[in-house]
Image (cartoon, rainbow, N blue to C red):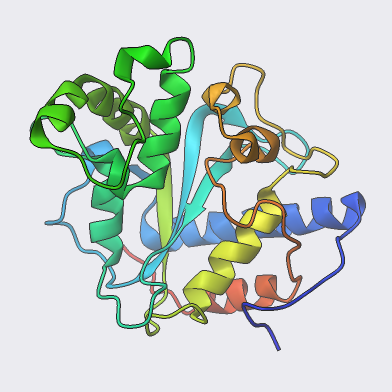
Length: 246
């Protein structure tokens, strides 16, 4: 039985490559069913969104090398993994997008934004020394950070993504959490033979977080874990249950 607590042995590179090819074939079907990909820069809460789901971000210039053609997935995420959480899919995506009018945002509420911003500041972190400091910040600090929040919004806003609707209850054992965890473990290159590696100019290589650099993903959690092959069956079932959009 597929659970969030499975302990598994690493898959050999040949098996992982085959699983990556199947994974991307499934995501191609998902993109067709959900009308994707789209970008956050072109999205708003007025659009039709499922209450809950898993999202998959790609990045311009980051192409697959080995598993097939097209852009590679650079971040997988979900939401409402705590019991009782009411966070919706769009609310989580909106945290990554930032503020539509100002172009700013709150990197303290989005690890995705924090990581991208840290990479943009790699040459001179002193340009925004408060970046990533604390879980809250005074208004004056947030205003001083606005330029960098805006730059992060511009980068993330142009990343194509699509989503998988999964309307299960909140909690760590949700199917959304299982899909997120196993997809990241499959995609991650941390401690493994690199498959579909990042380009030499990938912004993530400038990030000070080793897990981002070694995994070739804008993720930190689950990058050093082993995936359960059974999750692909679950993923396929969920995608097949997704209603096609005209």
